[in-house]
Length: 95
Image (cartoon, rainbow, N blue to C red; front, top):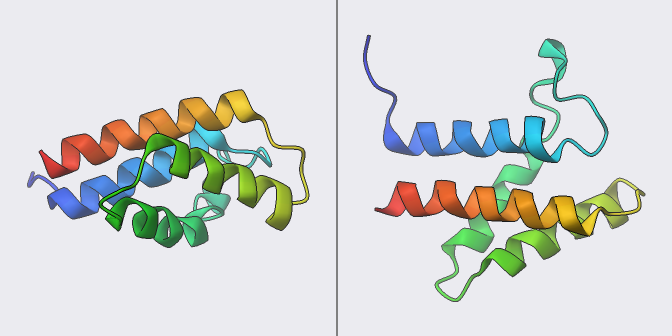
């Protein structure tokens, strides 16, 4: 079995984090809805592409999505934890 390309693995890690750790609308466990949060990955990658980015920028983006696009009351604590996990994936990817 071949190892996935590092970039592909990084995207998969982001997707899994959004589906299982963030999952604001509760669909992450549904196999047929595994792509529900994929539209937010590019935005996260754009944030990570900025050399001055931070965990706070990721957190703010997650909160913005929950509030403005989903119409939910954001969970700041969960957004912080998810942003930290996304940052860890990023650090492993660039190492």
